[in-house]
Image (cartoon, rainbow, N blue to C red):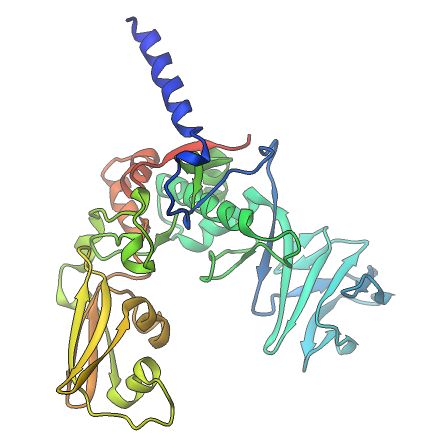
Length: 396
């Protein structure tokens, strides 16, 4: 067979593999989603929730309109000067002037509105909260991807890592978007609850990484992969089933990682200390009224990848067990930075010493950096962290 013919056969087989029907997908589909149907003909839009009261400025002379949940006009006027939108005790304000106490309003104007310094021509959804307000912006999807790259990676990191991040972030977001009901107020949050996001994205390298991988996502057996990622896995990524208590899935299995060198010495490990009574109330107590027992003997159950799957406190007359997943949620991910840790209780104080930041599943950003430094390209890096998944382009 001629080399050119062989290459053509390989390409066809590869394409056929990517287009395997959903029926061929494994039953453990929490991390998989069907591609959009009908297929995307062009770049989609995405609705992003910006929390923490971002700066919203209505320009001088703009005619603005506020509409309520039922579409009724709540306020319509012209700004005599540039004014900032705010919330005071649940009431939306413009400058010092109260506008409405509605729980959800849409703001539109005949001139672009400034959000965090970026001029936005589309209308905004304003969601008042107890500590301020959130803003839902609808922007081109690739602008969003550039903003995720800029928020997630250091400015000095090379383009190959940024390409990896672009494809992982795009896959992650598309899975979330396909699962979001059309009636939802937004599709994705600009925070660690979904993906961190900087708006607007000003870094040219982030934009270049988004543009050069435009429309490219990760596919696994005909489905889009929810390409999870973390800051640092500690030297070995965690399998999805270890952390999320789900059936195994090949692209989110445990793999070795070059970030191990960052955790080689004791001083590199993270440490968290907490008094036993406070820990018991937060993590173990079934009732607030129940008396706090004295500390027992702490034992840990681990998965092969190092993940703590069960935290056990043993007593002569019984034991208390909590899953690793629940333990981290109760104690707080900023305290228990990952589930790869050791724990010891001495003199009424519990000490955790561990490695890795985040859930440790999927791509390790620091490990990807080390691979890029050693000469690996973004395709090789993706293949290492998501075994069995392949890049595919959904739209041009």
